[in-house]
Amino acid sequence: MLHLINKSPFERNALDSCLRMARPGSAILLIEDGVYAALAKAAHAEKIISRMDDFSFYVLGHDVAARGLNDAPLIEGIDVVDYEGFVDLVAEHDVTQSWL
Amino acid sequence: MSEMNEFDENGPEVIKRFMYVNRKAPYGTIYALECLEVVLVAAAFDQDVSVVFLDDGVCQLKKNQDTTGIGMKNFSKTYGALDDYDVEKIYVEKESLAARGLTEDDLVIPVEVLAADDLREVMAQQDVIISS
Image 1: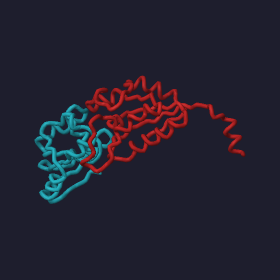
Image 2 (image 1 turned 180 degrees about the vertical axis):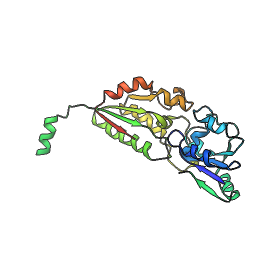
Image 3 (image 1 turned 135 degrees about the horizontal axis):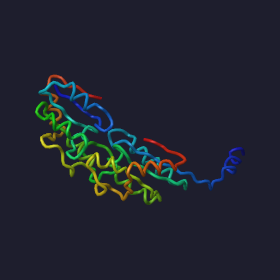
Image 4 (image 1 turned 90 degrees about the horizontal axis):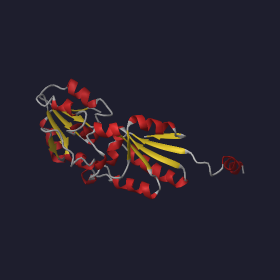
């Protein structure tokens, strides 16, 4: 399953709920304000780092750039994808769940 | 006529302290852009205006924003206009910056970084607080 997170982890608990409910082996793509969860130096980084073995994490590069985060270190192991990569992820997984 | 009287009673010279509190990241919602526009309009009315950035609001001021990939206007440069409108009291909460791995050097405009303990006192002095 592909999980989409589009809310900031500082403002909503979408990422927490997703990490709690998603089956190991799932893919998690951070988009829109969800990309703040990918910041290596931010307070929520450990939540993702500690689950690297359970999930494959992706982040949408266009949303990272829009927020001025291209010069900020992202968590190692998160794959940066573009819109084509986003489409590929949706196509590769039978179900997509949005944690709105 | 009655409007004129009201105006006279209060006096146009009455200056209130208006504080605009930004707590949302840019682009994910329209709040950040709308609040910036409200501040710029309000600044024309010769009031005592201050602007605060806390929680995800600090992300509005991040340098190097490039929105070409998301098809939205990059309004981060517009914060530079606050100074032109004589909005000089711009506060950023220290703890919110730190939680996001950011420092004052990451921001598009000069600001006053205040710890929550100090920002609380500035907030307490306001007549009107508008949140977004």
